[in-house]
Image (cartoon, rainbow, N blue to C red; front, side, top):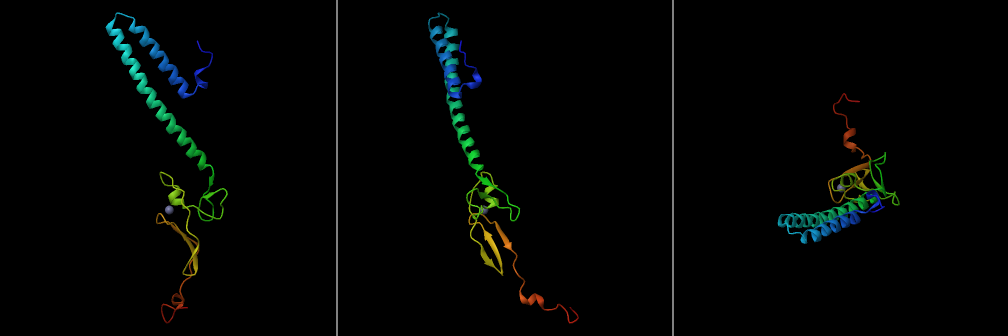
Length: 151
Ligand SMILES: [Zn+2]
């Protein structure tokens, strides 16, 4: 009996142990004259091999997702001023909050500040997101009174 508890074994080690046990049972069953037993153990061995392939695929997928989660820790936000997200080392280059918060997440830099009717705005080159960082100014025509009695 192993002195290592299952909790500290890796998934690969656990599955490897299970496959070895099934192979051992298969070898023992081959010596038996019981055909039903041989068939059942052979089927069990094949099923264990199928499960091994599936578990290793899931283990790899899990590893990738953990790496993706860890990379998310490098991004901070949303900020109070504009609701932007930023890479920790790039506080002057905001990410599009709409793209970043979509599923699957997409870290896209917003475009540079551009003039917009006297204000300043940023927009995303991937989606329709745009934000006025400095409000635009009304045209002089809005200063004309609406009526002769207007003030
Ligand atoms: Zn976007």
